[in-house]
Length: 88
Image 1 (cartoon, one colour):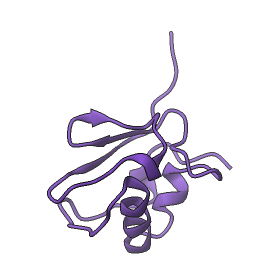
Image 2 (cartoon, rainbow, N blue to C red; image 1 turned 180 degrees about the vertical axis):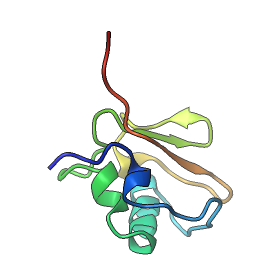
Image 3 (cartoon, rainbow, N blue to C red; image 1 turned 135 degrees about the horizontal axis):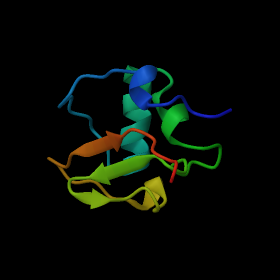
Image 4 (cartoon, rainbow, N blue to C red; image 1 turned 135 degrees about the vertical axis):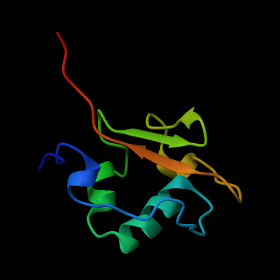
């Protein structure tokens, strides 16, 4: 199925909620347990970030990288941006 218009349509999580994770995949899994449905809205069935979704770690866009290859360090911030698409 397709994701909702924005992640916020389905899940509104606490801003700045700390998670213990070594990789982005682990971090999204933890957030998914706190906000059911979040991981399914961000990741496809292969565990990759869905097209048109934005994910950043700190200021680096990481949506095109495999989430299990994105290493996290203490204090890193995961930002999930609404899905965007369209054109003129």
